[in-house]
Image (cartoon, rainbow, N blue to C red):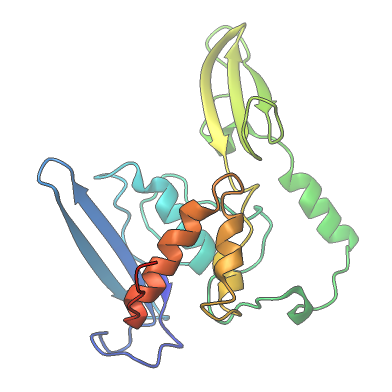
Amino acid sequence: GVDERLRTKRQGLPSGADFTVFYHLLSIERNSDVMIKVALSESDLSVPTVTGIWPNASWYEREVWDMFGIDFPGHPHLTRIMMPPTWEGHPLRKDYPARATEFDPFSLTLAKQQLEEEAARFRPEDWGMKRSGTNEDYMFLNLGPNHPSAHGAFRIILQLDGEEIVDCVPDVGYHHRGAEKMAERQSWHSFIPYTDRIDYLGGVMNNLPYVLSVEKLAGIKVPDR
């Protein structure tokens, strides 16, 4: 998704296009791809889910809702995926603050503390899991978010029937640093170090495509070394 509201160069955009949802369809068999753009007005941020056609769109639609507040009617589990469940607002909207100093001073009221504690309570049903089977209750274990078998901060909720794992649900978002939001306050040049942090074991894997993209967009011809 893209928040188009502050765009000054609007050639090719339909009138009233405040947000755009992108669908990038790839055919490996045909070696071709298609980009579909759906323009949305701020007064009607809603587009039907495509999870019935492409189930793997589930996480993408959750992220778009989480970051932009765009609704996907018919989605089986439209909940936050990057941000905590109690987070207020949608960070990649252009009217959302980019620095902590732009927020009001933080205060932990009793009501907020109780809300956070209740949100941390584990309910299998919230994750699409059954609490019990025909003759027994299931056991639920957390693997992570910090575990030697998982590279980085990554949580997996395991559902066990005795010693057999019958289901597992991944929970991502613990490693989300908000790089896109930070980019809003940077120049194209000063953002290069941030691309290095996306993968701390292979910074150049993000440095290079970012710089190549900037050069292509700006029409910069870099001479051979």
